[in-house]
Image (tube, rainbow, N blue to C red; front, side, top):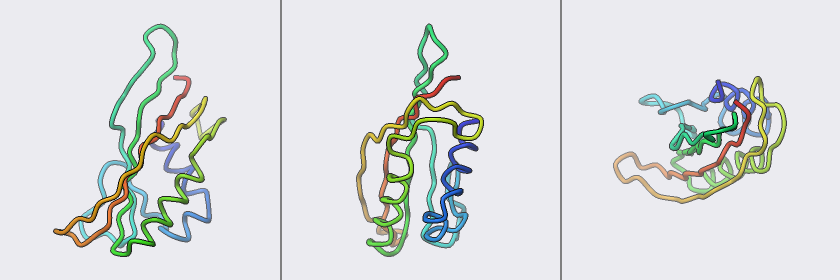
Length: 124
């Protein structure tokens, strides 16, 4: 499953683990989680109709009470994933392509939220 491979691959990088520990959650961040934390989920599940290639888009949401900390975690994830090609766990990745990034501040939680979208092009 691609989500497991993504999580394991990202957490294999000490540079990211130093910033978030193991707080990288498929789906949603648990209530009262320690910050900074990252959630990721598939937001578009596109698949090719005549060959076994999929290119879903995943959103990574970085949350932190400190703006610069959120920026650092975001940059680290982008540096790890952008233009990745090869084996990611059991997934054969043709390429990971950075798509978009946007920032917001959530008044109700008092957290900075930076969201990034990546397209994962891979053989199914």
